[in-house]
Length: 224
Image (cartoon, rainbow, N blue to C red):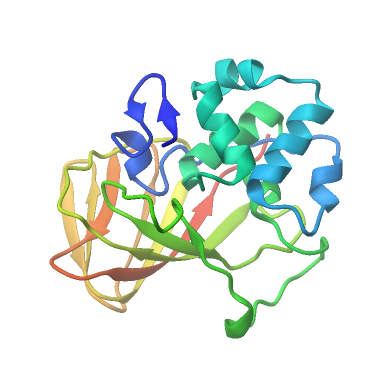
């Protein structure tokens, strides 16, 4: 299980919000990982870390994650949530999109329904406070400032707390009901409804009622 030194296991606090921790990640000199079409997320992290001469202990200090947790991510034993991916990107001076990119870099990208690939928060054998799976909708667009995702949220009945971070988010509900907590407000959104908010406000997205909720989520962060 991926462990966070400050908050215990990933999924116990701010990382429960699948958008938690998404903020500006500067893109520096292109690395081999940025052109590695067939690398997994963990392999990209490992490759760039090694290129920069960083040890697992160095990454642990930069991210606040345990070295053993980082080892699980790099080996593919754990599939980190988006908030953890942003931490890793910031630690490596990489854009979030670089870590989840697939195929060759393109000036524009078209993702056909049949070509979308599921990315679970953890392998399906792992249980989380509430789970989600997501599909990146622009994995091959170069230098993108927006990260669009198709997300399916599920609840297990456990307590999840709001979180805040830099940036803005746009959410459009496709299926099921969504409960959006933004600051002191609680909004229940039905299919066809949308919400746009500053991520600096404490916020939490979760299914409203039984069943799952499917949304389109667009994360925007100003690059440095």
